[in-house]
Image 1 (tube, rainbow, N blue to C red):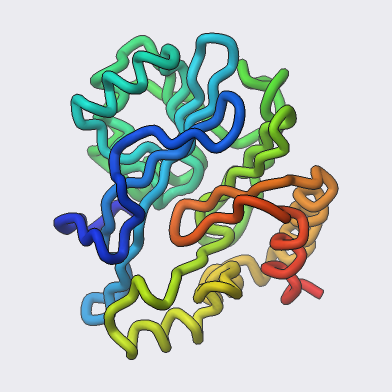
Image 2 (cartoon, rainbow, N blue to C red):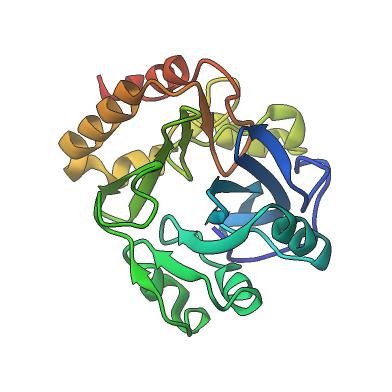
Length: 252
């Protein structure tokens, strides 16, 4: 989702930006800049969000946002970045910056990121396509969900009951979209708050993988998350399980 970067638009973003915001023990979010993404003449403002989870002294960095010096200092004050996560083929843009800043960290990339990112992936990395065998297994469950266009990898931090999604749910707040036409587009696409969900184009890409998608959602609900972090739009601070049931009701 990091194509077509633009200057930050504070009205559609979630300031303060590029700073750690604690949400639970050993978990932070970082709200990043707004990007424009979509068809050439129909680009929607996407606020961006990163999640940071501390395991011991090591940091799990999910869907990295930009890394200005001020944020780097904050990050180094809470732990050591060890795992830099590209959770689906659209979330890769700033990974190279983080690997350059923290060369001891390992990048884990979801399937097809290399195909999408091309020469932006010029560093060693590991595959993120299974459910086990990761150094964070004792603290975080990993669930890849394969679809026609992409695989999104879902994570669940057990201690805090926090589910970390990327694009499976988008929840754009109407007042943060200036154009009434774009608000209509987002609503028609099934991603407008307070009833945000999986965008209809992404649902279509999973049409041949509906059984697996439904099984994945059942697993997410079984985890019984208290909160659900998403990359774009208003995230869900409470009632996470109920929000999942609402957002994925289209699966039947």
